[in-house]
Length: 357
Ligand SMILES: [Zn+2]
Image 1: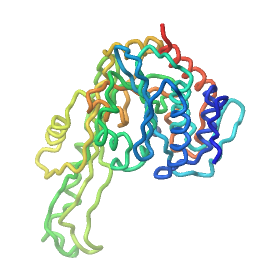
Image 2: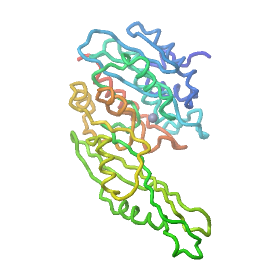
Image 3: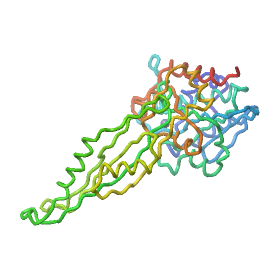
Image 4: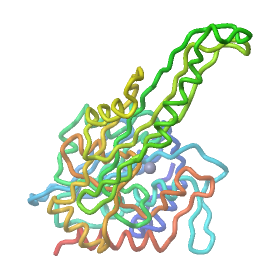
């Protein structure tokens, strides 16, 4: 395949977004796009380029006092009659326009056009963000080549509609079990109904007053919800077991252990099994590079409510935030699109931040 990422395309973040969208890269099919990106980066004299699987990393080594990461995932969710891209006025439609090839375009544009950034920069283009964690290029590299990720600060170019979304909330899933005694429903007084016993669990959850926490000026809003319920044996049996799956989204000032303790406190008296947990990430806006980034953006950051890969950087001790041109509400949506103005503004912001003073 002829590489569509020509010098003219790389020089224009809008054309570059479109070219990247038009290389199909549904998760686990990132080889073609990774090949194109790698080829372009290897030709740049001020970068050293590495590859692991379909994850490509390129770095400057200018001896600057600090190093920042610009990171974006190359994969998209499955196509939905939205490939290749189309233009309608100032909007570019297509799979990955918002999540997140417009963000990837920022990193690739800067990597190839900015030879003397004010920090050393690691540009990171990774595979398989949209699927199970075991495929995630960022976590594979963190295991295989942790030194590739050494940095003082990271910007993930996920869709935030041009604002800074800092940190992220943690998420915990747990199963609460209510038990009873099985009986024929024609003589139900011989049994104890476990589904009815779930009422009290659901009452506590529906009356639960979730915390709002402000950290570094960012508000995080917690939530604790029943997300699935399962119980029952047959149409004529009083059920002896009911399972309620609970998802607790917790602010990043709580560790997973503290979140679990709180969940157990709310649901005291019930059998509870934690099945899954991902810690949150504090906003980390105190790092000098983060302060300078916020100054370049010129608008107040907000707290990230969903879980994102910033938490993987936080786990490595690297403060990280999200900043990208796409609208997060359109990610994974069949009408996914990005505003051309947001691409131009965001690219200008990053350039202002990284260009030598
Ligand atoms: Zn994404």
